[in-house]
Each structure stands twice: as structure tokens, then as C-alpha cells.
Length: 224
Length: 273
Image (cartoon, rainbow over all chains, first blue to last red):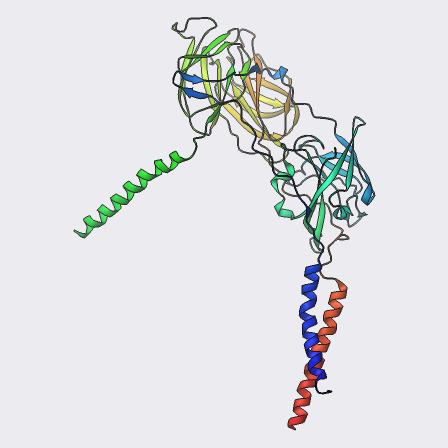
């Protein structure tokens, strides 16, 4: 009996050595949950002209003033000024942000408790994807407004407060994680079904470059 | 003899490929051209004939059509005074060759000596970097060459008649004005350049008649997405690569493996000895 003991120990150790990483992999939390609505169908084009036997037929050409003095860009609805997520205790100010100078990255508010709304895209609730970004953390300031964003999942509620005093409710439909260099183009869509995209950093952290590997995106749709 | 044989094969190959290529291309749905027609002849209401057919009636100065999709091909354009008979001599005529997929602006304007002229400009509809706009200035005015300032800053030194100048600028609202070589200037006028668009400003009219003005065309949908969002450098939220409990289990297992292995080897050595 005693002779067998080392062999039993050898077998158990070998199994544990192989099974543990497999179990860890199998039990890893699911980063991507929920389903995203399908992408919008291609935009319908202007009335097309058709060649008929009698020549060119252009249905109802729309003519309008082209004086610069008469030009008015399409008015945008009131911009978002605040955002609240009850389930993770977020209540933050939202400021408009653009693109960081000389870079292709979105401008990020300096204060980690302030969120940024990508002002070149739609406002939350309008057609397309409204993007609100926030710090997960900062080396100097500690945890940011979106520190717990990755905990959100389908069904969670998000409230947006607008400059005109109105508010809109949104419902989370999906959570996705993307490598930073591979954000989907649809994240900044200007057309299609209204979507609110909350973006922060996540995934593995590289202490040398002081940066996270991924972006965590929470997708929410207007709650009706 | 051998040479001829090779030549024949090669010729046959070339004929086959060249014959097949157009057939293959024809299979794809032909792309239309996108055309915007602008009217910049002062004090002249026009009837526009395309390929001999009255297409636009009572076309007023400083107006434009919405973008039209037209099949590629050659078009003749005749412009007559409103109500003039279809067989009368046109005030202005020209032809334009539209290629599949291209985006052009056709503008009836004035030459530098004040004669009416049909100008065709190809529009660059490639995407612009996030946050910016493609500013295009086109001169179809009867006026000396001029420069352009945005918010007082010189962006174009010299834009002669029937030519254009292009520059990528930050999206925003600017005060637009021309800096004349001599005499008359246009503006300042408010110019809103929306992000991800091409904003095309036309200088139109005649300096002599005091009809100088600015027309504007915008092409939307040229935006690019920002490349990345960098929202953390603290590392507090880093996903733990490997949980501590698993590392512990594996360390114990490794000790067990080495220990039991050593015990087995030692026992064998003892048995043999």
C-alpha cells in the first residue's frame, strides 16, 4: 500500500496542474453579454434619374436657395449635461468633447469624475450612436466615474439629463469588450437606430505604458 | 517555328483576357454619378435643358438642386431665358461627361470678363479625419483674383476665376471673407463648417454690377471615427490575469509532482542498490 502512495500523489498533482488553468479559463467571467441590434440598412439615396425612351426623366428635382447667408445647419437637440446609473452609483456631469489635438483619440475630461459626450456625433436619443466616455481610473486621481461600468449588463437603467432640463431613460442591451485599436466603426454611427454607447477602459493593464488593453462598451437603447 | 507557337498562345491569352474583362465589369451594377447643379448667373432666371429636354424650369439665381443621381454618360446642357422656346439659341450651352461613381458640381457662373460660363468641378468625397472639415473655395465671379481669410487668418492666397482651392480645417463656425487684389471684397459672413463634411463656398456675381455674393454647398457623411478612447492610466480596474487561488493550487500540485517523482526515483535507486 505504501509503495503506491508516491504514484497516487504523482497522478493527482499532474491532474491538478493541468485541470486548474482549464477550470480558470472555463470559469472566466463573460465580458460580452447581451445582443446588439442589427446595423442600420444603407441610407436611401436621393431620387435617381432614369433614362427612358424619350430621354432623361428626373423626378421632382428639389431646388433650394444656395446663398451662404441662407444656410442653416440642422439644429441639434439639447446636449447632455448629466448622467446617472443607479445600479453602480454613478451621478456625473457630462461635458462636450471633441478630438484630442494632433491625435485621433477622443478628447477626455481631465477630471476623472466628469464624463465626456462626443460632440460630433448625435445627442443621446437621436438617430445613430451617441458616445459618452469616462475614466475608469487615473494614476493620480484614483477611480473614475466609470470605475464600475463593466458591472452593467442587460436590463440596467441609465438616465441622461439634458441642457434644457429634460431627461431620458435608457436600458442597457449589451456589454462588449474590444481591443483598443479595433473599435467598431458603428460605435460612432451618425445614422440608424438611436443608441447610447458608454465607453471606458478595461481588460489587462500594462504598468509600463500605463494603459489598458481594451475598451469596455455598454450599449443602451431608449427605454419606452 | 517555336517562336510563332509561343506568340500565338500569348495572343490568344491576351485576346481572351481582354475580351472577358469588359463582360465581367458589365456584370456589376453600374454606379450612377452624383450631380449638383448650381445657378450663379446674376439677374437671370433660367430654363435648363438636359439632352434637349426641359429638366428645370424657372431656375433662379443663387439656388441649387439637391444632389441628383444620373447614369454615367455624356450630357448636353442648354440654358435659356425662362419661357424662351426650346428651339431658340441658348444663352449658355455645354456638355459634360459623367463617369460612374463620381460626384460633381455643375455651376453656371461668370468668367473673369463677365461672360456666362458652365463650370464643372469634381468633388472630393474621401473621408476627413475626425474633428475636421474639407473647406473648398471656388471662384466663378467676375472679379479680380482674391485670397480667403477665416477669422482673419489667411487660408488661401489666390483663387483665380474658374478655379478652386482646398484645405482641411477644424470643424467650427468662422467669419469668412475674401481679400481682394483690388477693390471689392466679399464678407465677412458667418460660415458653419460641420464636422465630417465638405463645405464648398462659391464666390459668385460681378464686381462691376455690385452683385458679388457667396453661395454654399455641403456634402455630408465624410466623417471618420476617432481611432481610440484612452480613459485610464491607474491600473486599479485591471482584470486580474490569473486568480490567486488557482496559482496556489498549481504551486501545491507542482511541489507534489516534484516530491512524488523524487520519492519514486529514490526508491528505485534503493531497490537496485
